[in-house]
Length: 82
Image 1 (cartoon, rainbow, N blue to C red):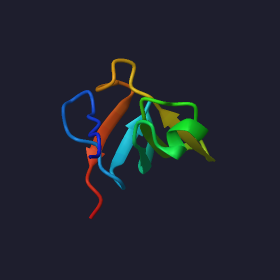
Image 2: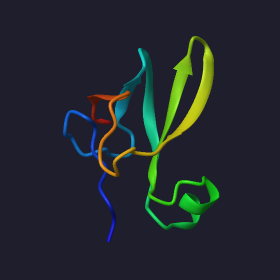
Image 3: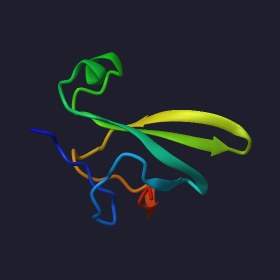
Image 4: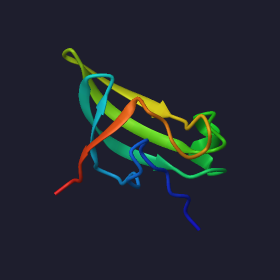
């Protein structure tokens, strides 16, 4: 069974979501399930979310691991992928 992660505002995080990360736009490229091979490789046993963000012209990927297992506030939901 897959774990669902949520934005601080309450929406379920989905692959392809457009997001804002500390005033920079990006999107969700992967949702890492707890205990998966990817979770172990990324050193996030509780799972998390991978975002691709444009940091002032530099493309960057970041793994977000929820501090309390459910929510985190620097990852802001903008819109669903269409």
